[in-house]
Image (tube, rainbow, N blue to C red):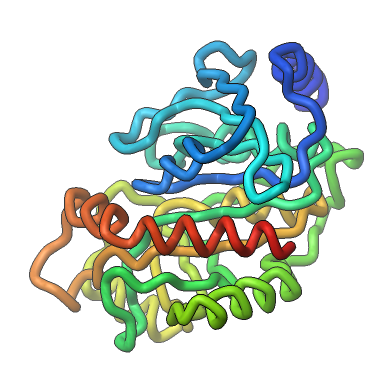
Amino acid sequence: MSLTEKLQETVAFIQGKGVKEVEFGLILGSGLGELAEEIEEAVVIPYNEIPHFPVSTVVGHAGQLVYGVLSGKKVLALQGRFHYYEGHSMQTVTYPVRVMKALNAHSVVVTNACGGVNTSFTPGDLMLITDQINFMGDNPLIGENEEEMGPRFPDMSQAYTLAYRETAKKVAEAKNLHLKEGVYMGFSGPTYETPAEIRFARTIGADAVGMSTVPEVIVAAHSGLKVLGISCITNLAAGMQANLNHEEVVETTQRVKAEFKELIKETLAAL
């Protein structure tokens, strides 16, 4: 079955559940799924009911689509995303972005929890993603290209929409929120990076490292979607603090999620 045929089935099912026009897709990372609970007039669809949809296995990811209104915008939120390290193919990881585009969304907002590589970052900082480095060893666009989905060789020079970044900066400034900016580097995981890998990442220009986001943004660029990306720096990367664990990631996102949610909601309202 072709990607186009799969998408037709998925979209027909989702629309049958009452999902109408979508403006923004939201991809909510570790500890940030709660933002979906603030969506008004919500239609909730568990992933395991949706044809051709993968199922999320990560602790702290709910595993459902939430559609409705947030900050006056019609949004479709992924409460729980899919990761390459779960054993999914890159095409599976990015399938929800294809679905968002097929539902006529014009933009996606991606969020994640990640490790700080930039020595000026501290855990709890929020970072506006300006660009990305794909170090995952794979690319979701490998294989046959379906022309109606996007070009064979997509331009990645403005993967993160400049105008959206400017809006987010203005919102942060008005809220007196110190928003960092930087380059996000995607590793496959599920191991945290080694201290040597972190030195390498810093040397080539990364400010933060994580195990998600990069594939979704590649497919968003391929699909012609505008992108806003915001990371929560949950810990300092390997070699910069004593040890790394998932509990700390969840704990830090819990601590800063109120301002994270406010930043996203007010930026959405302003876009």
